[in-house]
Image 1 (spheres, helix red, strand yellow):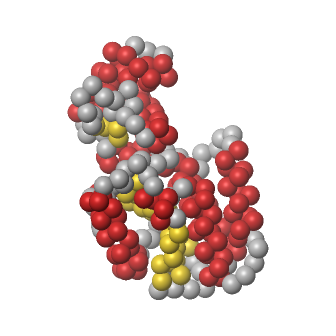
Image 2: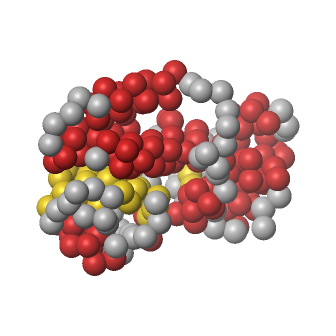
Image 3: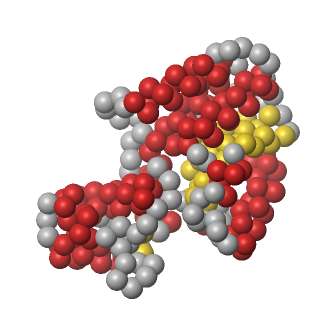
Length: 236
């Protein structure tokens, strides 16, 4: 069980790492929490001991582990009320525009995926009947995590098997998050899959979501994916 400060420290590491894509150091966190760097290093050492963060290089900052991301995801409330940001308003406007333009259901779902790609800069996916629609592959492979051939091969294997796995596993929660090695396929791909279930004319078990690196802004992406699934149900 993490202390309140450790919980907030892990949250800060996850969110800062998502933003800058480089290990987070104690000096930066010391300024954020208004405590000494020694205090931060002590707390980081405990988080590392418990497996929530890792130190990729000697004398470098820390990055979250899959366990750290899972703890973060399990302990954030994406429905909590708060001040609406410009990004929130932009997302709602984009969804309303793309999904409210009418057309056949297949095109509406594709529009929703394209909107997710635009807003998250991840790979967008959706099931349409027995087919998997994907968009934004260049976004995924443009991330700094995917710069070597082995990693790209792992991601490609995940994508090849994603559609049959979704039909077989049929995740039953409105919002499902699979982090890193939690993915039943492509366990070494370093990816997180965030999908929302929705009802469509094609199936009661349709899915829409994104695939991106484990390093991402989970709170924002989870909220957006869930809202997109809800919006599709309203429109369709």
